[in-house]
Image 1 (cartoon, rainbow, N blue to C red):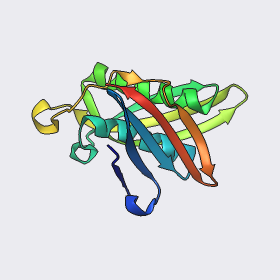
Image 2 (cartoon, helix red, strand yellow):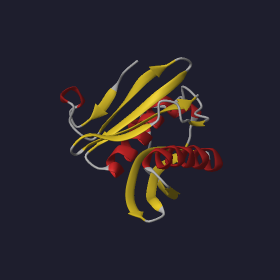
Image 3 (cartoon, helix red, strand yellow):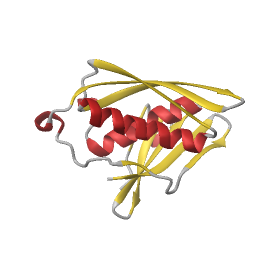
Amino acid sequence: MSEAVGADAASGSLPRWEHFPHDADIGVRGFGGTIGDACEQAALAMIAAICDPADVRLKRSVEIRVQAPNLDFLLVDWLNAIVYEMAERRMIFGAFAVVIDRNAQGYHLKGRALGETVSRERHSPAVEVKGATFTELAFVEDRPRLWRAQCVIDV
């Protein structure tokens, strides 16, 4: 299972996301020109495992903040914070905006998730995401201005 979306996914344009197979779980990858773009796309890949992000109405905004000592942990914390907010608010998100700062303590992500109350009829959730894992975790700059953020999500 490998599927991608974005400006022109077939040509590898940025930003974009994709899934990669992993036993009973699902691998998610986000690609972007910045670390923030890669985080946004990884979040969209996670949502796309549940439903089509394009079917989500962007009615409400939820602020999410996480901090971590490195980019790998930041990705896992970011995705798990999204899972928490979806469960706590009974929402599904369809778009994300991320700003990341770095200081001596590490990385600080300030994000915004946009979405609506989940509707089983309209969204037809395919799986329930339980959380992001450290399996196949990587947050790297594959080449200048091509960031890849990936991990396996537990479904």
